[in-house]
Image (cartoon, rainbow, N blue to C red; front, top):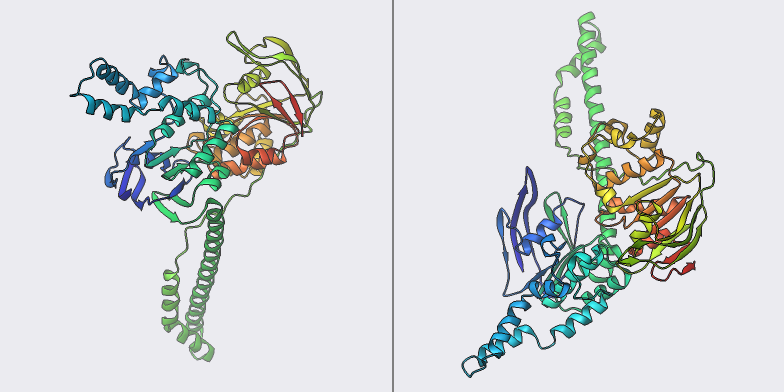
Length: 526
């Protein structure tokens, strides 16, 4: 694949500007950049899902398989098998096979052989093997609408893997996947002798697969012929070098400004002195200094030549919660609890979650992890048993949708809505502690980056004296800045955490005290 001078504008923003690169044999590329940098747009152009404004994508008789982000609602009433066959165009091949088989003659044997080869002698065996590897436990004759988000991703991944294309374009392939599926996919991609480009914020996944990094930044692409871990080290080195150049240039500029100012003051003193006493030798010296404008001109030109690098200091990671303000019992008890609906229910769960405990809810996709959380939050009623929540418990719930929500209101309004007797001093103090500038309080929440939104959401939890955090797949779709904040949160938070995540780095920071297996109801103390 050869990509030449791609440009794409969305609205008034230049998403891609003269993007060029090649995808050579055995290139397994990690495509990185902050959210909104254009990663998904670039993949869609490469997959011919959308067109660039200009530029070319040249394929050398290569086939491309692109991982879609979702299954459109219009296919909800198809069975899983029907949808897979439709996407692979197997349904049309099957129809033609049946037509040919009903009237096999010498004239159609060549076409029959060709169609049979396209259909594949072992399609169903390959499909079952991949679905088992992805830990997909649903009946393939069930309808698409019965699947959870993670199960739908598995269906889309199965389609990509079955297409057996030369080039794989994978946009966030691990989002909502359970651990077994992630490990299988990782193994499959590592062993595949294919070109691929992967967008993922799962650092462990990228570390284990990619051998090159393409970084999108402000519409441009930067190429790094190295692993993701080496790329992170290189970026830190580049940051420190840029910071050093910035400080050096600023110091040099300040010194020259001072010299110019002193030279001008010296000259002005000469003028004033001469005006009072023309016979004063010292005054004559000042006057001579005034007439010697070459020095000032030279300093000014040197000042104009200094280029200050475009540098922005990283905001330090800071997560601050004062958990001692709320009194009372802060424990949560799951008492013979069974969650679910008429068509699905979890195993019976008995668990006392003492204040300060970290609970990791584990289990495959579609096993009821989010259903349990909704029951604890009292969004749905239990089928059996109950949830006893202490009088001193203040629950804060964050999901991927929370961090990605787009609200057209100011930061201050978003932080303080639904709060009675607002203590403005406390709000502004917490903004400062979470490294949110006071001057930005009237900025629209909608305009914030994912990292900034994450800071605001964490500050909102702190303002509300949250002492129990419920976190449901909060790492999905976040860029590195936001992820680092989440990692800091779960590593330093002193209250109770109830969490769902298949992100391996996140789970290392969480360091759970208890693993709760939602499928069996078993409790594992770590």
